[in-house]
Length: 346
Image 1 (cartoon, rainbow, N blue to C red):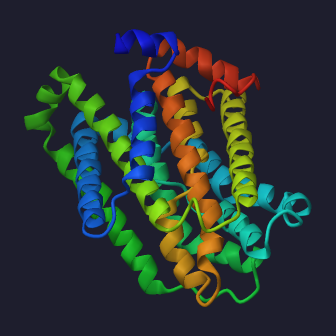
Image 2: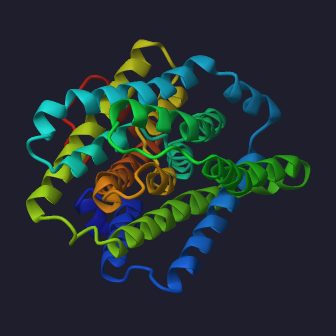
């Protein structure tokens, strides 16, 4: 009966579980001693995900993904050029509607690097070019440690602190130990594990989707604990949600359309959509503490917190739709041709 209800509502099981994760995080957020435990479990799940990816991918596939320079250059252009341009162009509209700190937060959101874990996990669920996603998302996060402070100093000049080299080293080490080391260990384990993984495809699906659900729950818990639903007026919150949706839809449309116009394969277009449209909460929050020391950091990072939740919800829905080969072709064609986006942002 439950499955019949989901089919009647045209909601797949994963999307339903995603909504449940958001509701649980809103009502019962991880906090106090529970938050470190939830973060540790999420980190372990992500490490397992990358271990399995490393074990599943051949050496040729990894080399091909790392050397796909046209795709990486396009993804970086969306992350560090298109997003900031959209943020600056929106100034005449947004500045009168928001407080100075909230608009500063919108600009800050636009200059951040892409996410790593969720971009790769969504690409995996959607059956995109996983090696290229790993290379692009990891590189974006590392480059952002240096590019984001430069863009902040260029676009947001009032009282921005100098970036901390210690922050950069810590971020690089965190990416290395959580993502690259498990991936390398998994790849070197291929002679022993590749056969088992190929015979148990359900394991990859379980880890892919389970890691996304954990990321969503922990991210929403942190946002709720920071006062996501209470620290700004309802009207400002609704405006931020609207701006985030519009910004994300514009980038999703452009990534799908330009990927199609440039003749990328379906797998590459999926990678472009998921890696080119993301902004990193994990990188953005600690960097904000340094870049905006002594300022209203809470208000500045609020647009990022809201955009992060929306991108997880929307992209998880798209990834679920793309996981079926027949549906994914139809959906990318719809997005690339600029069709009505309401089914995507359902």
